[in-house]
Amino acid sequence: MEPANETLVREFILLGFSPLARLQPLLFVIFLLLYLLTLGTNAIIVSTIVLDRALHTPMYFFLAVLSCSETCYTFVIVPRMLVDLLAPRKTISFLGCAIQMSAFLFLGCSHSFLLAAMGYDRYVAICDPLRYSVLMGRGACVGLVAAACACGFTIAQIITSLVFHLPFHASNQLHHFFCDIRPVLKVASHQTHLSQIVIFVLCALVLVIPLLLILVSYICIISAVLQFPSALGRCKAFSTCASHLIVVTVHYGCASFIYLRPNSNYSSSQDALISVSYTILTPLFNPTIYSLRNKEFRSALRRVVGRAISCHNINLDLLFPSSKAQGYRENVPEQQ
Image 1 (cartoon, rainbow, N blue to C red):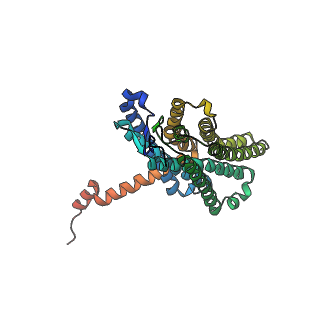
Image 2 (image 1 turned 120 degrees about the vertical axis):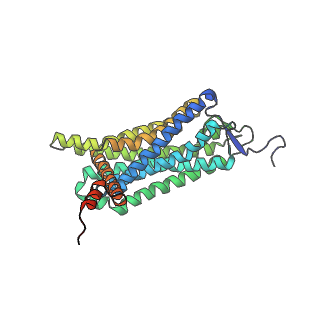
Image 3 (image 1 turned 90 degrees about the horizontal axis):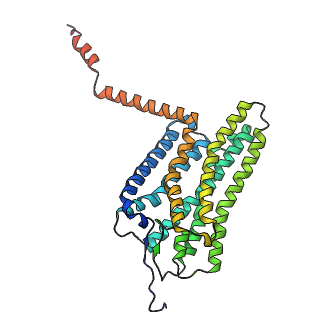
């Protein structure tokens, strides 16, 4: 039984953008445009990879999965955030908060392991190219993605259970625009040392293990590339890894700052600002960096667009025969 003067929290109030009350309509327009651009960009990337057979390779398979992951990642947070920017009362139910955190952590953790799988793909492509088609067959690629999702799902469920099994009686005001780990833990009535340690260790494992695997992959890649006799070959090999390295740096830099920082250095305003970058900007930039830096993808995109325009013109010709052909048929004398 709980004391009479304490009531269970049944909903949370999101105060992430409260200091910017006058700018919220403008933020709504900016974030909506960025969100639509993110959806459109990722849809183009996935469609191009699916429609062009030249891109049916492991690297582009992982890129398509990355784009789908980024789209789902934004869908968990951004639509709700856009509604709250215009809503007079920004609340989310206790269950809704738990579901949002679970989905967010699942996608974020899976993203970390997916980046490690992409690093392994680059390692095999450069260090063992003769066996690339064998080591990175369809079954291996699907298995790596499935393993990343399984690890992400398991860790997300453990962390969410540990957070929402804590008692919430005192305050229900989250100084954030979605249900992240630290803001929710901050309003818990009391936290056990064990739960804090387990959550920190799991967050560290999600970040450290994939990052170590990526570092090992790139140490092997660098040592192999430096042995290439041609400078052009070395540049080409490094250029195929540059996009992945940029995405890894952004992802692990933001995540490490948010989840591996001591509680004494917690700042809700800093966390909200960093969270905007990795929930709105990063899902737009990551797949775009991969595609725009890649000549093969740009060529495939031109082919897909060209085929789409050709099919569209053919359909128009079938529906509306050209006036020239029509005039020719009209001028042909009827045979007696």
